[in-house]
Image (cartoon, rainbow, N blue to C red):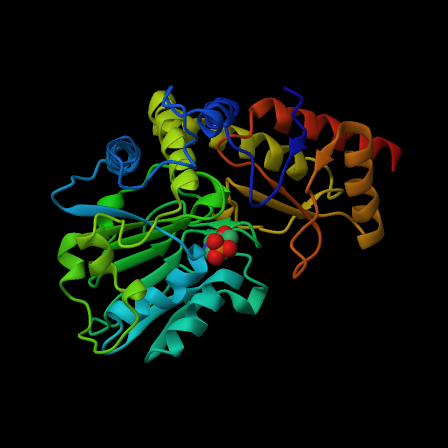
Length: 360
Ligand SMILES: *Cc1c(COP(=O)(O)O)cnc(C)c1O
């Protein structure tokens, strides 16, 4: 297979063996003479696909099916920005604002009820994770964004001593590092950053949390977590193919082990940040606080936007390195190095960066 060095922030690189299994399943799933896209979602074969994906997700997180439930929904992480408060915001909610996605989550929650932003790193263009904050004990939940895809910051450790339900948007670092997932009452992740293709969002819900949801009349059924749970994540036709791909990615994660995947991610990000820190300021990581630097999205600047444009163009022209341009809202350069990005890609990028620095 001819693979580009794809540093896209999402949809992003997937493990080659997942792509291969998917290409086979798209043509003929398990010798049934049918594509995975042509099967009834109510068939026993497809039911096994979704049930296994749910069970594997819990296995990776060390969570028990008695306590937690896994949903696969449409609508992206962006639907969760509204669905979460719609179900759980009664009195008020606490949010920590660490970037564009957190800001969007806050904006949606404000449509439902009272939101208090208890900490924000907006003052420094979101280049750190706030450490000082006071949680309102009478709030319905605290929402954090574990990895800030656009600014390249990440909560490396889970918040401590949270006295209220904890909720996280883990879209861009789901299963990239080990966490104490049992600290969370609800986790959501759009698949296209680390666990699969666009079109499906994983939602992990603590069963005791669902009992705290608001009482609602005449609401859209599709927004009700409980209804989706009661219908085994098949209230309507689920995104069958994306769920299959996510399930294959979970098998790949289980085979490698989350601990090993985390170690690889630390190594990959480490060599890239270390190289830049030693470049005499030629490459400038945007996140100065080392403990907050994302393992997934490495954001940096060169001296001028013109030099950055040349860097991105040269990387593409000489090495077929793609999608290195920073998000349109911040500019600069961003190398997204998710789970499926091999360390060799990062080594090749560093080699290119060394050469580029010498020549420019
Ligand atoms: C990409 C991203 C989103 C948006 O996901 P959609 O699936 O496009 O709605 C939300 N949060 C984070 C952290 C993201 O990286």
